Image (cartoon, rainbow, N blue to C red; front, top):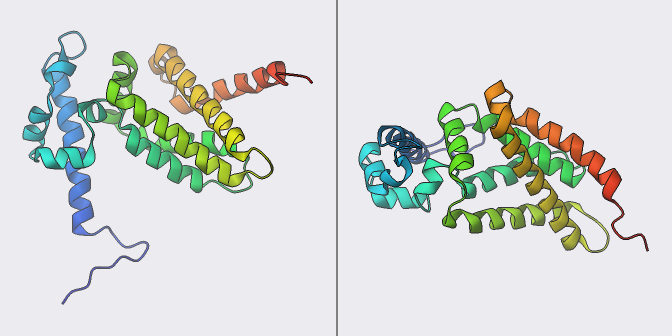
Length: 217
């Protein structure tokens, strides 16, 4: 009987490859359908249904919901997967880095890979233009809480959980501001979102000097 290898560095097995291809097929199908069915001005989001996505991708509804919680995840951003990728990137950052810095640099690492795909760039722009959908808000909150847990693991001393949540909130706010600024100007200039995030980080350093301590008692 042939044995499947699970050693590091060995190519993924057939099942993993099939899942990856199915996921990519659904993302591409949704991207195509959005444009074909009206785009931004012609109701492309509303017209692009899960049934049409799975038909175009050649997969079942069950396969779709094994990967995504709804069409917002495939037409725009899949926050569950992005959170997992961010957490993995954070864990791979050197322990010597300050936790907040590690969280931001991990996001930069993740964005470099994500934006290598033109389809993902369009998904990101759709997210910014169409806004958050109801199903996405809880996933965003879950993402922030999970990165807070990872930050807490790197902290020492008192009030680790509270300090970690504040840092995670700061990271989330800077990422959100960078996204808005990139969409408003950086995208048209051909600037990478990482470059925009770096600009926001530099401003945040100045704000920290101006704003803290909050209560000097």
